[in-house]
Image (cartoon, rainbow, N blue to C red; front, side, top):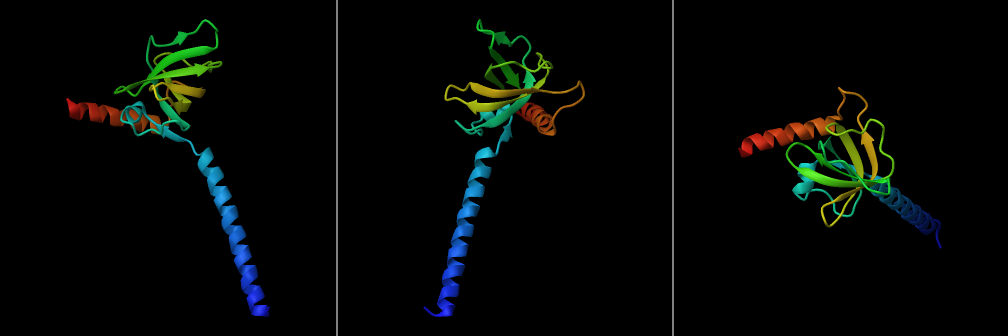
Length: 147
């Protein structure tokens, strides 16, 4: 084999290895990517079914129900336009309260119930994630145009 052919072979092998490594990195990145969706987007079918994402909004007052096992909690989350039921098994954050902001991470079931693996509560009275604030503002604007 001529030196020129050996060089092409080595370059081809290096490019194949680089493409394989790039594919593995992109696959790992895609598996760990978590998007934020609002209850309105979930109701409109824009949220992925069976894939992890975050949903945020306000916890509906009077919707928090604790199961007899002491671990399972059911509540509703809203962006003031739509409501999505959430089920979470575990300890809730201390700042989690009705009529306050919360973000849940988990998967949407075929029955429309969001099964959360993690629940986050906002830190103080004035803070709201920019995505949640924008979503609530959009929901208000949409509700006004529909009336």
